[in-house]
Amino acid sequence: MRSGWDRPWSGWIGVRQLDAKAPLREAPWMALRALGDLAQRFPGGLSLVWDAPLTWLDELPSETRTAFWGALGHLPGLTLHFRGELPPGIAEGSIQAWLHGTKPPEGFSSRAWRQGWVGWCPEADDTTWRLPELGVSFTDGQEGLSTLWGEIILPLPALAHLSPEELLPTLMDTQGPMEQGLSQRIAAGAWPEAFPFHRRRAAWRLAVTGGREFLASGGNWEEGAHHLEALTTALSTAMRTPVVSGVSSDFRVASALGHQAMREGHPWRYALAMPPASPSFTPGLGADPRDPSPLEARTQFPSAMASILAHPPVAMLRVPSLPQEAAVGAFLRGQQCLPAIQWIPPGEAPPGPFLPDHPWAPSSAFTPILDVTQALPQSLFGEWDPHA
Image 1: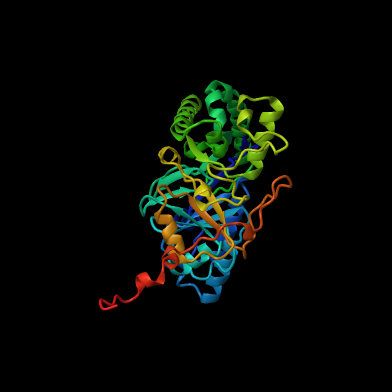
Image 2: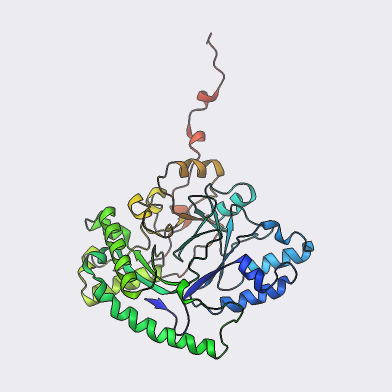
Protein backbone atom coordinates (compact mmCIF):
# COMPACT_ATOMS: atom_id res chain seq x y z
CA MET A 1 0.00 0.00 0.00
CA ARG A 2 1.24 3.47 -0.90
CA SER A 3 -0.41 6.61 0.44
CA GLY A 4 0.37 10.00 1.92
CA TRP A 5 0.34 10.73 5.66
CA ASP A 6 -1.85 13.83 5.55
CA ARG A 7 -2.72 14.29 1.89
CA PRO A 8 -3.83 12.35 -1.21
CA TRP A 9 -1.20 10.22 -2.93
CA SER A 10 -1.58 11.53 -6.50
CA GLY A 11 -3.90 13.64 -8.64
CA TRP A 12 -4.63 15.31 -11.95
CA ILE A 13 -5.81 18.71 -13.13
CA GLY A 14 -7.00 20.00 -16.52
CA VAL A 15 -5.27 22.97 -18.09
CA ARG A 16 -8.60 24.82 -18.36
CA GLN A 17 -9.06 24.49 -14.59
CA LEU A 18 -5.50 25.72 -14.08
CA ASP A 19 -6.12 28.67 -16.39
CA ALA A 20 -9.23 29.67 -14.44
CA LYS A 21 -7.14 30.11 -11.28
CA ALA A 22 -3.82 31.27 -12.77
CA PRO A 23 -4.26 32.85 -16.26
CA LEU A 24 -1.97 30.84 -18.47
CA ARG A 25 -1.88 33.17 -21.49
CA GLU A 26 -1.65 36.43 -19.55
CA ALA A 27 0.82 35.28 -16.87
CA PRO A 28 2.47 31.97 -17.90
CA TRP A 29 5.09 32.14 -15.13
CA MET A 30 2.45 32.58 -12.44
CA ALA A 31 0.63 29.55 -13.80
CA LEU A 32 3.90 27.59 -13.81
CA ARG A 33 4.52 28.57 -10.19
CA ALA A 34 0.99 27.55 -9.16
CA LEU A 35 1.45 24.22 -10.93
CA GLY A 36 4.78 23.57 -9.23
CA ASP A 37 3.29 24.40 -5.85
CA LEU A 38 0.42 21.99 -6.47
CA ALA A 39 2.75 19.21 -7.70
CA GLN A 40 4.63 19.34 -4.39
CA ARG A 41 1.44 18.38 -2.54
CA PHE A 42 1.22 14.91 -4.12
CA PRO A 43 3.87 12.35 -3.10
CA GLY A 44 2.86 10.11 -6.03
CA GLY A 45 2.96 12.90 -8.61
CA LEU A 46 0.55 15.19 -10.44
CA SER A 47 -0.74 14.93 -14.01
CA LEU A 48 -1.62 17.94 -16.17
CA VAL A 49 -4.21 17.11 -18.84
CA TRP A 50 -3.98 19.54 -21.76
CA ASP A 51 -7.72 19.68 -22.51
CA ALA A 52 -7.40 22.92 -24.51
CA PRO A 53 -6.12 23.74 -28.03
CA LEU A 54 -2.34 23.75 -28.43
CA THR A 55 -2.73 27.15 -30.09
CA TRP A 56 -3.58 28.72 -26.72
CA LEU A 57 -0.04 30.02 -26.30
CA ASP A 58 0.48 31.22 -29.89
CA GLU A 59 -0.03 34.85 -28.84
CA LEU A 60 2.99 34.72 -26.54
CA PRO A 61 6.40 35.81 -27.89
CA SER A 62 8.28 32.86 -29.35
CA GLU A 63 11.08 33.14 -26.75
CA THR A 64 8.59 33.13 -23.87
CA ARG A 65 6.65 30.24 -25.38
CA THR A 66 9.80 28.14 -25.88
CA ALA A 67 11.03 28.83 -22.35
CA PHE A 68 7.61 28.01 -20.88
CA TRP A 69 7.36 24.65 -22.67
CA GLY A 70 10.91 23.79 -21.63
CA ALA A 71 10.20 24.54 -17.97
CA LEU A 72 6.84 22.75 -18.03
CA GLY A 73 8.30 19.59 -19.58
CA HIS A 74 10.88 19.22 -16.80
CA LEU A 75 8.88 20.28 -13.74
CA PRO A 76 9.61 17.73 -10.96
CA GLY A 77 6.68 15.49 -10.06
CA LEU A 78 4.59 16.53 -13.10
CA THR A 79 3.39 14.31 -15.95
CA LEU A 80 1.93 15.95 -19.07
CA HIS A 81 -0.88 14.52 -21.21
CA PHE A 82 -1.62 15.76 -24.74
CA ARG A 83 -4.24 14.87 -27.34
CA GLY A 84 -2.84 13.56 -30.62
CA GLU A 85 0.28 15.72 -30.98
CA LEU A 86 2.93 17.53 -29.01
CA PRO A 87 3.42 21.28 -28.94
CA PRO A 88 6.33 22.16 -31.26
CA GLY A 89 9.55 22.56 -29.32
CA ILE A 90 8.50 20.84 -26.10
CA ALA A 91 10.28 17.53 -26.73
CA GLU A 92 13.94 17.97 -27.55
CA GLY A 93 14.85 15.15 -25.21
CA SER A 94 13.10 12.83 -22.80
CA ILE A 95 10.24 14.36 -20.79
CA GLN A 96 7.57 12.88 -18.54
CA ALA A 97 4.65 13.06 -20.99
CA TRP A 98 2.05 10.91 -22.73
CA LEU A 99 0.27 11.33 -26.04
CA HIS A 100 -3.35 10.14 -26.20
CA GLY A 101 -5.24 9.23 -29.35
CA THR A 102 -7.13 6.61 -31.31
CA LYS A 103 -4.18 6.30 -33.74
CA PRO A 104 -0.41 6.29 -33.21
CA PRO A 105 1.29 9.71 -33.38
CA GLU A 106 2.37 11.13 -36.73
CA GLY A 107 5.01 13.55 -37.93
CA PHE A 108 7.08 15.30 -35.29
CA SER A 109 5.15 13.60 -32.48
CA SER A 110 5.79 10.17 -34.01
CA ARG A 111 9.53 10.83 -34.14
CA ALA A 112 9.53 12.00 -30.50
CA TRP A 113 7.59 8.88 -29.49
CA ARG A 114 9.80 6.43 -31.39
CA GLN A 115 12.91 8.08 -29.98
CA GLY A 116 11.64 7.37 -26.48
CA TRP A 117 11.05 10.99 -25.50
CA VAL A 118 7.33 10.48 -24.69
CA GLY A 119 4.86 7.61 -24.42
CA TRP A 120 1.64 6.89 -26.31
CA CYS A 121 -1.63 5.75 -24.72
CA PRO A 122 -4.32 4.41 -27.13
CA GLU A 123 -7.85 5.69 -26.60
CA ALA A 124 -11.25 4.39 -27.68
CA ASP A 125 -12.38 7.81 -28.96
CA ASP A 126 -11.23 11.42 -29.23
CA THR A 127 -12.82 12.53 -25.95
CA THR A 128 -11.46 9.87 -23.57
CA TRP A 129 -8.44 10.27 -21.31
CA ARG A 130 -6.95 7.25 -19.56
CA LEU A 131 -3.94 8.17 -17.47
CA PRO A 132 -1.33 5.38 -17.28
CA GLU A 133 -0.22 4.40 -13.77
CA LEU A 134 -2.86 6.74 -12.30
CA GLY A 135 -5.94 4.63 -12.96
CA VAL A 136 -8.29 7.44 -13.93
CA SER A 137 -10.67 7.34 -16.87
CA PHE A 138 -12.81 10.33 -17.84
CA THR A 139 -14.06 12.31 -20.84
CA ASP A 140 -13.70 15.95 -21.83
CA GLY A 141 -16.01 18.19 -19.83
CA GLN A 142 -16.67 15.52 -17.20
CA GLU A 143 -15.89 16.26 -13.56
CA GLY A 144 -14.38 12.91 -12.77
CA LEU A 145 -11.91 11.75 -10.15
CA SER A 146 -9.19 14.27 -9.40
CA THR A 147 -7.18 12.62 -6.63
CA LEU A 148 -6.21 9.18 -5.38
CA TRP A 149 -6.01 8.47 -1.66
CA GLY A 150 -3.44 5.82 -2.42
CA GLU A 151 -2.68 2.55 -4.16
CA ILE A 152 -3.21 -1.04 -3.10
CA ILE A 153 -0.92 -3.24 -5.20
CA LEU A 154 -1.39 -7.02 -5.15
CA PRO A 155 0.17 -9.91 -7.08
CA LEU A 156 -2.36 -11.28 -9.55
CA PRO A 157 -1.89 -14.86 -8.22
CA ALA A 158 -2.91 -13.61 -4.74
CA LEU A 159 -6.41 -12.48 -5.73
CA ALA A 160 -7.85 -16.00 -5.47
CA HIS A 161 -6.62 -16.25 -1.86
CA LEU A 162 -7.68 -12.83 -0.53
CA SER A 163 -11.05 -11.57 0.63
CA PRO A 164 -12.16 -7.93 1.09
CA GLU A 165 -12.42 -8.48 4.85
CA GLU A 166 -8.66 -9.06 5.01
CA LEU A 167 -7.89 -5.73 3.32
CA LEU A 168 -10.56 -3.48 4.82
CA PRO A 169 -9.01 -3.02 8.30
CA THR A 170 -5.73 -1.81 6.79
CA LEU A 171 -7.54 0.52 4.40
CA MET A 172 -9.71 2.03 7.12
CA ASP A 173 -6.77 2.42 9.52
CA THR A 174 -4.95 4.31 6.77
CA GLN A 175 -7.73 6.54 5.47
CA GLY A 176 -9.06 7.71 8.86
CA PRO A 177 -5.85 9.37 10.12
CA MET A 178 -5.06 10.57 6.60
CA GLU A 179 -8.36 12.46 6.36
CA GLN A 180 -7.82 14.00 9.82
CA GLY A 181 -4.32 15.05 8.85
CA LEU A 182 -5.61 16.57 5.61
CA SER A 183 -8.22 18.55 7.55
CA GLN A 184 -5.51 19.97 9.77
CA ARG A 185 -3.35 20.74 6.73
CA ILE A 186 -6.19 22.66 5.06
CA ALA A 187 -7.06 24.51 8.28
CA ALA A 188 -3.42 25.55 8.67
CA GLY A 189 -3.35 26.98 5.15
CA ALA A 190 -0.90 24.33 3.92
CA TRP A 191 -3.06 23.41 0.92
CA PRO A 192 -3.42 25.71 -2.14
CA GLU A 193 -6.65 27.66 -1.70
CA ALA A 194 -7.04 28.06 -5.46
CA PHE A 195 -7.42 24.29 -5.87
CA PRO A 196 -9.77 23.06 -3.12
CA PHE A 197 -9.90 19.39 -2.23
CA HIS A 198 -13.15 17.51 -3.02
CA ARG A 199 -13.66 14.30 -1.11
CA ARG A 200 -16.27 13.01 -3.54
CA ARG A 201 -13.71 13.20 -6.32
CA ALA A 202 -11.11 11.09 -4.50
CA ALA A 203 -10.64 7.33 -4.95
CA TRP A 204 -8.40 4.40 -4.16
CA ARG A 205 -6.55 2.49 -6.86
CA LEU A 206 -6.39 -1.31 -6.77
CA ALA A 207 -3.53 -2.40 -9.03
CA VAL A 208 -2.19 -5.85 -9.90
CA THR A 209 1.21 -7.09 -10.99
CA GLY A 210 2.82 -10.45 -11.75
CA GLY A 211 0.80 -11.47 -14.80
CA ARG A 212 3.58 -13.76 -16.00
CA GLU A 213 3.61 -15.74 -12.75
CA PHE A 214 -0.19 -15.89 -12.78
CA LEU A 215 -0.19 -17.68 -16.14
CA ALA A 216 2.75 -19.91 -15.17
CA SER A 217 0.83 -21.12 -12.09
CA GLY A 218 -2.15 -22.25 -14.17
CA GLY A 219 -4.35 -19.15 -14.08
CA ASN A 220 -6.30 -17.74 -17.01
CA TRP A 221 -7.14 -14.14 -17.82
CA GLU A 222 -10.91 -14.56 -17.47
CA GLU A 223 -10.43 -15.90 -13.95
CA GLY A 224 -8.03 -13.09 -13.06
CA ALA A 225 -10.39 -10.44 -14.41
CA HIS A 226 -13.28 -11.91 -12.41
CA HIS A 227 -11.31 -11.86 -9.15
CA LEU A 228 -10.08 -8.30 -9.74
CA GLU A 229 -13.55 -6.98 -10.58
CA ALA A 230 -15.15 -8.70 -7.57
CA LEU A 231 -12.53 -7.38 -5.15
CA THR A 232 -12.76 -3.86 -6.57
CA THR A 233 -16.55 -3.81 -6.24
CA ALA A 234 -16.49 -5.20 -2.69
CA LEU A 235 -13.90 -2.68 -1.48
CA SER A 236 -15.75 0.22 -3.09
CA THR A 237 -19.04 -0.79 -1.45
CA ALA A 238 -17.51 -1.26 1.99
CA MET A 239 -15.40 1.91 1.91
CA ARG A 240 -18.14 4.02 0.27
CA THR A 241 -15.37 5.40 -1.89
CA PRO A 242 -14.68 4.81 -5.59
CA VAL A 243 -12.04 2.15 -6.24
CA VAL A 244 -10.49 2.01 -9.71
CA SER A 245 -8.57 -0.98 -11.03
CA GLY A 246 -5.26 -0.81 -12.86
CA VAL A 247 -1.87 -2.42 -13.43
CA SER A 248 1.38 -1.63 -11.64
CA SER A 249 4.63 -1.64 -13.64
CA ASP A 250 6.79 -0.67 -10.66
CA PHE A 251 9.91 -2.89 -10.45
CA ARG A 252 10.47 -2.13 -6.78
CA VAL A 253 6.91 -3.08 -5.75
CA ALA A 254 6.99 -6.32 -7.77
CA SER A 255 10.27 -7.32 -6.11
CA ALA A 256 9.05 -6.39 -2.61
CA LEU A 257 5.85 -8.42 -3.02
CA GLY A 258 7.82 -11.47 -4.17
CA HIS A 259 10.24 -11.33 -1.25
CA GLN A 260 7.32 -10.78 1.14
CA ALA A 261 5.49 -13.86 -0.20
CA MET A 262 8.56 -16.02 0.39
CA ARG A 263 9.38 -14.51 3.77
CA GLU A 264 5.86 -14.78 5.19
CA GLY A 265 4.91 -18.05 3.49
CA HIS A 266 1.91 -16.77 1.53
CA PRO A 267 0.13 -19.37 -0.66
CA TRP A 268 0.90 -17.44 -3.84
CA ARG A 269 4.64 -17.91 -3.32
CA TYR A 270 4.39 -21.08 -5.38
CA ALA A 271 3.91 -18.93 -8.49
CA LEU A 272 7.45 -17.54 -8.09
CA ALA A 273 10.63 -18.94 -9.58
CA MET A 274 12.50 -21.41 -7.40
CA PRO A 275 15.84 -20.52 -5.74
CA PRO A 276 18.54 -19.58 -6.53
CA ALA A 277 16.50 -17.20 -8.75
CA SER A 278 15.40 -13.98 -7.09
CA PRO A 279 11.86 -14.33 -5.66
CA SER A 280 10.37 -11.41 -7.55
CA PHE A 281 7.14 -11.00 -9.44
CA THR A 282 7.30 -9.69 -13.00
CA PRO A 283 5.99 -6.10 -13.18
CA GLY A 284 2.83 -5.62 -15.25
CA LEU A 285 0.97 -8.27 -17.23
CA GLY A 286 3.58 -9.23 -19.81
CA ALA A 287 7.20 -10.31 -19.93
CA ASP A 288 9.79 -8.41 -17.93
CA PRO A 289 10.92 -5.39 -19.98
CA ARG A 290 14.47 -5.80 -18.64
CA ASP A 291 14.90 -9.23 -20.29
CA PRO A 292 15.19 -9.95 -24.04
CA SER A 293 11.88 -11.34 -25.30
CA PRO A 294 9.56 -10.95 -28.33
CA LEU A 295 7.73 -7.63 -28.55
CA GLU A 296 4.41 -9.49 -28.36
CA ALA A 297 5.37 -10.94 -24.97
CA ARG A 298 6.15 -7.49 -23.54
CA THR A 299 2.96 -5.91 -24.94
CA GLN A 300 0.63 -8.63 -23.66
CA PHE A 301 -2.76 -7.12 -22.86
CA PRO A 302 -5.59 -9.71 -22.83
CA SER A 303 -9.05 -8.54 -23.81
CA ALA A 304 -10.55 -10.04 -20.63
CA MET A 305 -8.47 -7.63 -18.54
CA ALA A 306 -8.98 -4.69 -20.91
CA SER A 307 -12.71 -4.63 -20.23
CA ILE A 308 -12.35 -3.94 -16.49
CA LEU A 309 -9.19 -1.81 -16.21
CA ALA A 310 -9.45 1.97 -15.91
CA HIS A 311 -6.26 2.38 -17.96
CA PRO A 312 -4.06 0.14 -20.13
CA PRO A 313 -0.83 -1.29 -18.69
CA VAL A 314 2.47 0.34 -19.59
CA ALA A 315 4.74 -1.61 -21.96
CA MET A 316 8.37 -0.46 -21.98
CA LEU A 317 9.89 -1.77 -25.23
CA ARG A 318 13.67 -1.75 -25.40
CA VAL A 319 15.00 -2.16 -28.95
CA PRO A 320 18.53 -2.25 -30.43
CA SER A 321 17.80 0.40 -33.06
CA LEU A 322 15.39 3.26 -33.62
CA PRO A 323 12.05 1.75 -34.76
CA GLN A 324 10.82 3.05 -38.10
CA GLU A 325 7.30 4.42 -38.52
CA ALA A 326 6.18 1.81 -41.07
CA ALA A 327 7.48 -1.07 -38.94
CA VAL A 328 5.77 0.29 -35.83
CA GLY A 329 2.48 0.67 -37.69
CA ALA A 330 2.64 -2.90 -38.99
CA PHE A 331 3.39 -4.23 -35.53
CA LEU A 332 0.53 -2.31 -33.87
CA ARG A 333 -2.00 -3.48 -36.47
CA GLY A 334 -1.27 -7.06 -35.43
CA GLN A 335 -2.18 -6.45 -31.77
CA GLN A 336 -5.71 -7.10 -30.50
CA CYS A 337 -5.54 -4.86 -27.40
CA LEU A 338 -2.88 -2.18 -27.24
CA PRO A 339 -1.13 -1.16 -24.01
CA ALA A 340 0.40 2.25 -23.40
CA ILE A 341 3.77 2.05 -25.16
CA GLN A 342 7.09 3.64 -24.22
CA TRP A 343 9.96 2.91 -26.64
CA ILE A 344 13.52 2.63 -25.27
CA PRO A 345 15.96 2.81 -28.23
CA PRO A 346 19.75 2.75 -27.65
CA GLY A 347 20.01 6.53 -27.28
CA GLU A 348 17.53 6.53 -24.38
CA ALA A 349 18.51 5.27 -20.92
CA PRO A 350 16.11 2.74 -19.39
CA PRO A 351 14.00 4.08 -16.52
CA GLY A 352 14.85 3.38 -12.90
CA PRO A 353 14.97 2.17 -10.29
CA PHE A 354 17.95 -0.07 -11.11
CA LEU A 355 17.81 -3.15 -8.91
CA PRO A 356 21.10 -5.00 -8.30
CA ASP A 357 19.50 -8.45 -8.47
CA HIS A 358 17.90 -7.83 -11.89
CA PRO A 359 19.79 -5.45 -14.20
CA TRP A 360 18.65 -4.34 -17.65
CA ALA A 361 20.02 -6.42 -20.51
CA PRO A 362 22.01 -4.37 -23.08
CA SER A 363 19.95 -2.99 -25.97
CA SER A 364 21.92 -5.14 -28.44
CA ALA A 365 20.42 -8.28 -26.89
CA PHE A 366 16.86 -7.35 -27.91
CA THR A 367 15.29 -8.25 -31.24
CA PRO A 368 14.87 -5.28 -33.62
CA ILE A 369 11.45 -4.38 -34.96
CA LEU A 370 11.49 -4.84 -38.74
CA ASP A 371 9.38 -3.41 -41.52
CA VAL A 372 7.62 -6.47 -42.94
CA THR A 373 7.36 -4.86 -46.39
CA GLN A 374 11.15 -4.64 -46.58
CA ALA A 375 11.48 -8.31 -45.68
CA LEU A 376 9.56 -9.48 -48.76
CA PRO A 377 11.44 -10.39 -51.97
CA GLN A 378 12.03 -7.32 -54.10
CA SER A 379 10.80 -9.17 -57.19
CA LEU A 380 7.25 -9.00 -55.83
CA PHE A 381 7.33 -5.23 -56.33
CA GLY A 382 8.90 -5.23 -59.78
CA GLU A 383 7.22 -4.65 -63.13
CA TRP A 384 5.52 -7.74 -64.54
CA ASP A 385 6.71 -8.65 -68.02
CA PRO A 386 4.26 -11.06 -69.77
CA HIS A 387 6.96 -12.04 -72.31
CA ALA A 388 9.57 -12.96 -69.71
